[in-house]
Amino acid sequence: MSEYAHPEVLVSTDWVHEHLNDPKVKLVEIDVDTQAYSAGHVPGAVGFNWQTQLQDTVRRDIVSKAELERLLGEAGISPDDTIVVYGDNNNWFAAYGFWLLKLYGHEDVRLMNGGRVKWLDEDDKELTAEAPDVTPTTYRARGEHPELRAKVGDILKIIEAGDHNLVDVRSPDEFTGKVIAPPGMSETAQRGGHIPGAKNIPWSSAVAEDGTFKSLGELQQIYQNGQGIDPAKPTVAYCRIGERSSHTWFVLKYLLGIDDVRNYDGSWTEYGNLIGQPIER
Amino acid sequence: MDHRTRVYDDVTELLPSEENPSPMVRLNRLSPAPETFPLFAKLEWMNPFGSVKDRAASYLLRDLEERGELGADTNGNGRPPRGIVEPTSGNTGISLATLASARGYPMLAVVPNKVPLEKKVLLKIAGAELEVVNDDLCPSPGMGDGSINLAKTYAKAQRDRYAMPNQYENEANVRAHLETTGPEIWRQTGGRVTHVFLSLGTCGTVTGLGRFLKEKNPEIRIHAVQPTEGHDVPGLRNVRQLEVSKLFDPSLIDEIHEIDYEIAYTRALELARKEGLLAGPSAGLIHEGARRVVERGGAGFGVLIFPDNVFKYTSNLVKHIPALAEGTTPPNQPSRANPAQQPQAVQATPTNPGGER
Image 1 (spheres, rainbow over the protein chains, first blue to last red):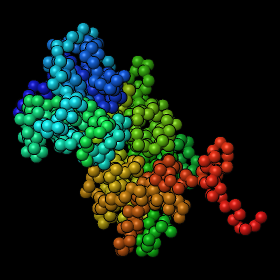
Image 2 (tube, chains in turn green, cyan):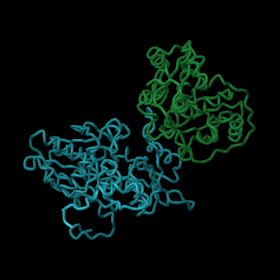
Image 3 (cartoon, helix red, strand yellow):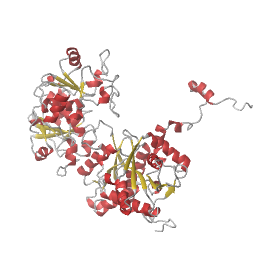
Image 4 (cartoon, each protein chain N blue to C red):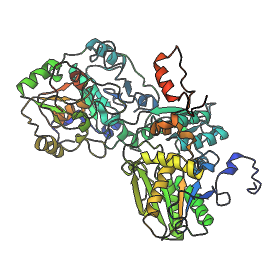
């Protein structure tokens, strides 16, 4: 893992295992399947629910800074702590949580490579259903990084200027508009297709057979040589609701080391509902 | 127990064995070459809990019991007895839950959402608790199967409450077929069997009976049928989904036939209407595979493993053959409550069909 541009943000299951009793390391599980945490989690990990805790439950938006501060405080986390996030489905929502934490200025956030399934399948790793012993703190965020987030206004300018790498990480069928969402997904859009000028590099392109990230050389081959992502250009990743694109955002920014990468969390469920905007299929 | 009078002290005495095999019935009207290549359906729904999975379930449970993994004595402290957790598309769960209930320990079944409602309700009737998983997300490399992962999570995180039989990895699943299905077929056919047709799920059946029969006669051909990708035939796995099973041994399979999954439903209907066999959709798929092999020509003696009957799949059948739902409610009456239907109702019922009145 040391070859990546920013290797410090990725930790192995063994690293987490060695730091289970480290008071400065706080574990956070975030899953697509919100049943999974209560069935069993890494000892000491708190669980965040992406549906009810990481987004505004009234208007469509990410959780507010104040709400996230409250959530982190209740989880016993301080701004100086190392937060390690992990989750199911190759860390989809764990990557989303990582992005949110960075957006609201938490300094030291890391992702557990391979996610919960890698931990589950390793014989020396324990799981527990017991709630962690938490001492609440008062968390004050140390500043924000809005430059990590793309909003629809930015997207419209990018379409006009054509000066960005625009990466659509959804499946090819979603990209071409054959389907609007993967089967079983409730969030959808009025139209299928993709943002003009986007390249389709499905999020799973970054993942090896064992669920961990591919090597730097393989990632460069896929994103730069294969798909022509120019690392010198500013870059935006999007998907359907912003979780799979967080995964690719992480890859582009921290593993490949592209400086200016934003996650468009509105993604297709925003863009595909706009009136009068161009769509490619 | 006496299998001649069929009077038993305990339902588990009905479990299949060489002495009490599941019946084999000759296919008559749906057999392309009845003289040169007879086909016999082995009716696994005649097992006590209704499917081929009774075999694996009883062996898996006995395996856990023999290892002292189950029951009230394993945790103490007056907590509920240690039970089982298992990912299941239904049949294994129904067999396991019934056996577990009869022995007094709880069962948690982790079930993919696409399993038909009948099976989910049957699991509850049999006493299982249900945890339903949305399994149809974007494919995730190296992540395996959602229901298997969740069941493993329970078994690992809550060891005091759950042991996991794990039909996908436990050799007891293979042993069930090595010691029962294989020997039954050999004895029932008098050693004449040349072809076995079956489907793949955990691969316990194919690996167990394949090992036994190929040892008896290496010339026996094992044909596996599987539905095309994106299928909707509960309990079956497409070859690209088989990596989840540690029991898959490709060396025992001579041919794999990939068949359009819609055919499973139409063939199941034919089996009911032409052979009087109320077979489920996986049996329909297996029959189609056998038919294709027989029609290539040549002689043989085929045994078809029919995993279960159609009773659990009525809603699935209606989904694939909508005509089955027609006429299941009273014919439309012209009514003030529903005036829109009036003209259609008049058209559908000729006013004077025979010219009489």
